[in-house]
Length: 290
Image (cartoon, rainbow, N blue to C red; front, top):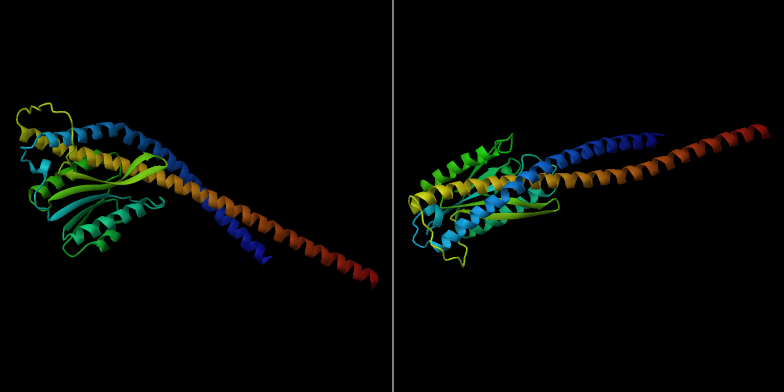
């Protein structure tokens, strides 16, 4: 009977876990729908803005704005990495960690210094161990909380431009999980400073008012904020999608465990009843013969 008690306890534990994973799956599904709508709603705008600047880069060869064209010598690279604040989201953080490790290894092999801004606290301690003594790491906490992601993106842009103007960093990139559907995510790295040149067949002359430098200074800064905000939206949607899938798999595994434990419990219970019946019948027969 002790074995039956242990099985009952196991079944109870698995049932409790299943309730939690099932609830988390439903919550993640609701959050995913909201995050997906926001990510898709702003993507066309952010993509078009990036495309226009990339084509301008190919047409405007006499621009001296460093935010736009970058610097000839790059000693320090700033990486903005989007991870999550919470776990239980499948391989979401693992894939980001794997990609960042490869990028850091390549930069260190080239002798570059790295300044890393970690958005999301889950991988901060891991990234700290990957950096060299000359590298720096900063955590941007509470980035995802509330409805302040756009304002937080603006704050981050101000810090980035200040570091670039002070020549603390020479190149800026963002690394995040691009969201395409509930089943398709992809780790992406995008250059924010400088703007990547894109060849175009459009030879239309671009007229700047009041001046090229002033327009580009404002537009490029604005573009950096928009691309960071879009990366944050994609990252949130990818995280919720990964969590929903992970919790769905965990619920299915719990169902399989419950099925197996129930079969085992019923067999042991039936065996125990059969043993008791055998003992009762044997006892009664012994009394009759005696």
